[in-house]
Length: 363
Image (cartoon, rainbow, N blue to C red; front, side):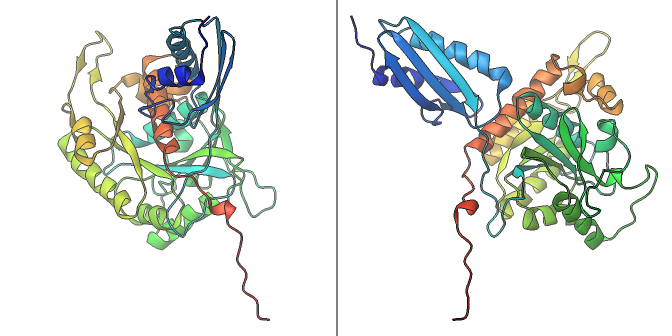
């Protein structure tokens, strides 16, 4: 009888590419244990990102690969996810109870950034993560409407706020603190102070990913976020239209200058789907997001259609991933969320908690 070795198993697992990190399971250090007893093989795989809807596919792929080893009888594959804190800008430390902050940005308005932010947050939660969303658009907060929330957040001590919960995700927004029709006539310093307070005075509860929905552009809010808030990564939302791509390039450049890694680009409204006949048409152009990704050597995380249902679901307070979890658009959001989190999983770990506090005393 042929003796099965760990080397045999590893060689086959090296040929199995995880599409969410674009690396094989061994190189990505996802294989945590290989146990062999006769013809029985037990594999323990640990992913650095949430992947509930991918686990069954991955398990099937591993079993199919290992069945090619002569003498194999039974194969057991255990898959878990372990989401850790990743490194942030130098001189900054992660926020308490928040492992990773991901900024969702766009160069210009009207590209569907807030809708994308909400659905990405819901997609990460659907994949098994603990998620929060911070509405950083102080002048035009839209997250409360999209999540069907209103009213002031509760406070246990009169100093800090508890996040409001919707569809299992924790949320905070200036929109919870003002009347819906109240204009925010604030200058830059007041706006940036409000952002800091929303982030640091909210009692986040053990969050894996905090999605920050930024206002469009590269103004005070973006600079505050990039320089004073510990961001682990950013994604850029654009449409295929040339004007949107020009502005998106500026946003991408800002993050590069302040050493915040850009995890990828999301192309929104890539094609229009007719609600009557289902015909697809690229009304905003074609291939813009892909060209921008290649130009900057970053990932195109995915492309979303201009679909009336996405807009209707968001306006009704039940975003697509919550309202139609098995639909085509929800699957695209989940795929983007997995790739985004997978890219982050390959980044450097945060070791700030490992270093002791150094206190200098006069003796």
